[in-house]
Amino acid sequence: MTIKTQAYLVHLLTASGAVFAMLALLEAVQEDWAMMFVWLIVAFAVDGVDGPLARKTQVKVNAPRIDGELLDLIIDYLTYVFIPAFALFQSGLLPGWTGWFAIIVITFMSAIYFADTRMKTSDYSFSGFPGCWNMVVLVLFAIKPDFWIILVLVVVLAAAMLFPIKFVHPFRTKRWRAVTLPMAFAWTLFGGWAAWVDFDPQSWAHWGLIVTTLWLLFAGIVQQVLYREKL
Image (cartoon, rainbow, N blue to C red; front, side, top):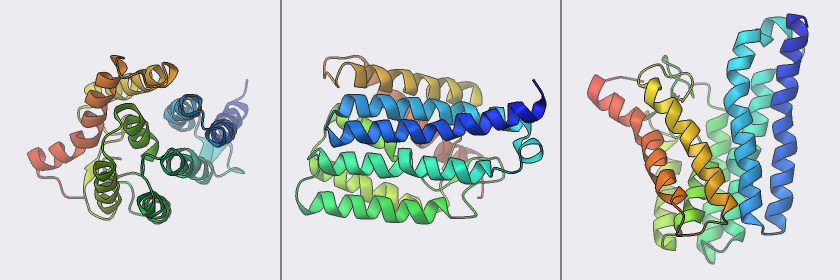
């Protein structure tokens, strides 16, 4: 198989995320939240591996007809933002006006963030919260906190998109990658487990989700403080 063929196959792998997004949306319309998250986690896993494969096969050189970065952003917006925001609204976790407020804030701020040319830092981390609402909403479905806590969390994370706060990229941020990458894999495992058991509150997956989510949220901020990094 030629390197050009491999490069175009990587684009096809990335594009498969659109199919998983549609499958997740169909489950969301049926309010089968567990299966919706299963498909979102599959899309999350694809998003995790297609980047390294794209760099390995040098898709910009060997498959330049397709803009892999644009393709990835389109699918990420669907799976990271649009469908999770719909689920948060439709599930009733945020009643009345709070649900409308959340979906407007999440979709609007995320659209601005995804178009920000300064999204990535010099060490390939993210500058500002990277719009991973799929991860946030899955944890909210699992632990079901009071709606005021959810609302405050939405506001804080949406605001964090605007400020130079570092969030690590599990694959590309070298510092602490030996911990962060396994944490990302563990989050995927615990997320799939939690969804598969229909968010049973007795499941140990909930604790795994909480621990791994806290690491992925705060590792970059801790690096900023310890190493006095400027983004």
